[in-house]
Length: 395
Image (spheres, rainbow, N blue to C red):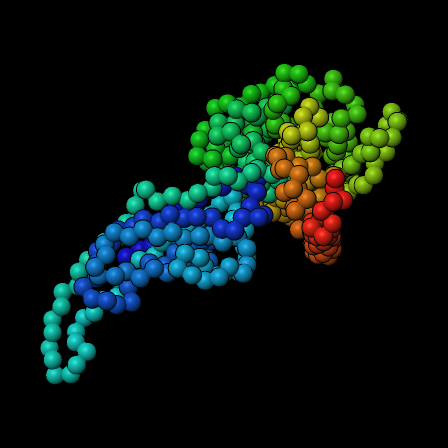
């Protein structure tokens, strides 16, 4: 019988660093085989084998607890599987493959037996559950890959009700086409239409402080000139609109320096003889927990190029980092600017997260912690011993 596939979409900001495995409470029913044989249920995730469960003749209803491990080194038992380390993506496929053995004929010679194959049936019960409760949400941004794959950060709300689209007062047909296709793709990924989107040509810092911004073209001039998104977008637009070659220049800015024109601290310059477009991400100037994704182009032909790249699944898969440059030759992604984080982690998880990227410092921290605990125990035991030997000292 054909395998049973389950598409499983997860929020990309799900923090799974310290998870020991995700519990899958699996309930299934099947036509029991007449004899004990090698019939089994194979479970895989993203084309990676997880576990196999035997299909026994005297059991037609079965409950199994399967742990989907996220780190390497788990011992192999009936409930846990030892597989190479992997990380769940935003889009995952869980596959249940029921393999039934057909015994036709006899195993001894000179014995004629006729057997009619029985049609096997199997089903995954709707009461099966995967437990993702208790996990925090925390992600390093900008991350255009999550935007291209699942519409994050706008997809935090299914109807995109915390999304503000900033566009010109008189948008072109190419800009509107791009906007509709972007929103349509996000709705298809989420599984719900973008009914809660707000549109404006003049965003207000107070009114829209708790919104993620999707920008087409430039941010209006009335924003503070020191805001990073306006500087980056306006500089990029000025480079895109230069005569001759189309150039895209992006800067990161140091705002601690008191000057009217911030000095670029890092830059990336891209040139193209034809139309050029860019998708770039920033931290929102209104709220440090909010983000801006800007869709920019050198003109109507550039917006057509962006739209074609967005509708092409292969090119959309190449969108990543903080800036993706779209040209006729393809999509190139780069990372410029500083990283910021959205979501919440307690300080101990943040410490573990920082140390996980530096194994040497993690080892030093572990040794220091052991020594500190040992010294505290030693001093405590000495104090207890001194009191027992000299009970009159405390009086």
